[in-house]
Length: 258
Image (cartoon, rainbow, N blue to C red):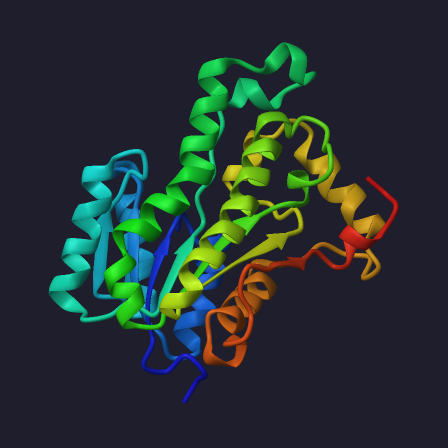
């Protein structure tokens, strides 16, 4: 019997079995959580359904986080199956590829900035707002995924770093607001991991290699390690933790290397 036994968890952002969201969903399922998953588009539907079968997940729903109507539909569907939501995992980030290449002064656009913030940061508020009643009923734990680029200038990360900074501020403001309702809000700042989303960052392989050499552990972290920390933060074992950004990066954030 795992430490998430009896918990109901919605995981947003699973794309394939190499994504960080998959690592979180897998570790939560192994700790006994009942999982619901979403998929962004029909292109990803079959992949997510395959993962759902693997994890014993019976609820798989479409969700484009830029659509308030789809967000509301997800929580309406959950309400029909669950009377509470104990865990909400937000693992969603996007910026146009051309915004993540070269000098920020040349790559940035108003449209790209707005899109990055809408999808990567505002969507956390939108999901939490729509799921508020279920989360309140379940003394819910909300978790999102960030990266060190939120506080340091990482080459080619550009507007995504600014969006992640916005996301981390959102964690603090939501935590301050929702604590009175018994809802906790935290983030995991993961080290670089080879995922589909990371492929859009120029010279990402070089970023991986440099991080592996610079971390105190002398290696990169895995989606399983991120998943383990996420499972802990969303469990009753972490009942006194909210508004925190927890680093799972092999210690890279404490070093002088960039």
